[in-house]
Image (cartoon, rainbow, N blue to C red; front, side, top):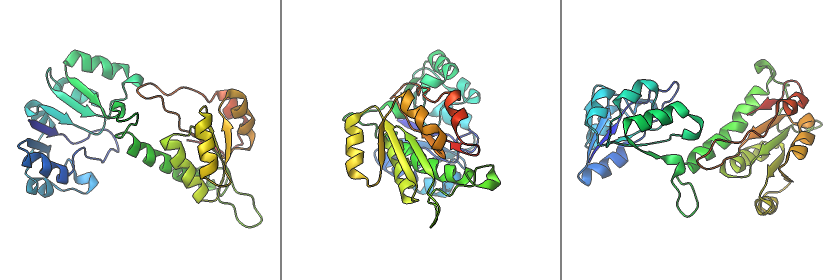
Amino acid sequence: MIIGVPKEIKEQEQRVALLPSLTNQLTRHGHSVLVERNAGLGSGYPDQDYVKAGAEIVEQAKEVFARADMIVKVKEPLKAEFPLLRRGQILFTYLHLAANKSLTEALLKSGVTGVAYETIQVDHRLPLLEPMSEIAGRMSVVMGANFLAKYNGGSGVLLGGVPGVLPGSVVILGGGTSGVNALRMAKGLGADATILDIDVERLRFLDIAIENLHTLYSNEANLDDLMPDCDLLIGAVLLPGAKAPKLITRAMLQKMKRGSVFV
């Protein structure tokens, strides 16, 4: 099989879908790998690493799409890439189609076989989505703490507090992979953390596993009660393969303190 790796064109996307180490494994098993020039540069992998691994460097994405039997990407195709897809080709990437009707229609029109990373399940787990959820959860607290700073327009609350000053209040909606990683970061900073979920067994496990944690069943009334004292609100609810539900209303947000943050 000819496997193509185009350079990501989505704004601020620096990742590459295939590392030189895996490229080496694929070529050793008889596959051909085409890599667009500088596709891995943003992730710290120059073209010579791919050449050493047995890949062929090509100049333009158009050639990668034209020659490859399978396209391996990180993010969903953008409009400029729609015409490059063709019937019988395999597209392996994050797609998140539930939130993107135009992409769904373009894929159907192209006849490409799309395989979405985020929908692949092994033993009721989502092994290709979990690493991204771990990163997102941890980054949510880092970014939230940053935007709480006065110079970013925040309230100036330090999540960990200091002697004589109470820590900031973090509310996390969802006890899955992303929510738990957000929780670990919040607790690591010394914040006062509350996590909500509709799975009582999940809440029971978290209550046992993590000290000084507030757990609460997720419903509109409980969320509404938490808003006035919340400094950092993190939404981390996932419905596999579906669009995330809208659980935070504008009325709830209006109850939050001026300068508080919602991630």
